Image (cartoon, rainbow, N blue to C red; front, side, top):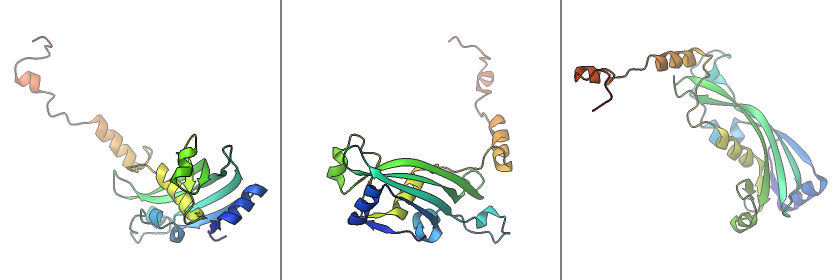
Length: 182
């Protein structure tokens, strides 16, 4: 199903029916996430550099306790990124399970007891692609890296154990040995 923008009248109907909408999102509809994708290396189909951004999401609409509609978002998928350790492609798995209160503007958000779990309507409409993109961007690591079980991660573990300590022998050079009293 194609991603939609939901108007305020349709939003009220979805909340009244406690409806659930399921969508699949790919790179063209999520431009900010697609921009994080590494440049392809022209490798095989199994090459992580050729990984496709894909997110499957479920949007459940419900009435909120403070009189505002709520959106329960569940999503899972993969986002292709660049490992900041080895600068090679990395397929990062993402999972979301969050409930957001839908408000029209900042003053409405300020009225809420917990204003941090909100989504604002954009010109009176709810843009589902923007909602999922915002929440996925919020959970991505600042510096993505391969897990320690991969060659990249194992090399990092070896390097951390063999850390270079340039001042380790300074006390000996100064003739102080290991004395801590001075």
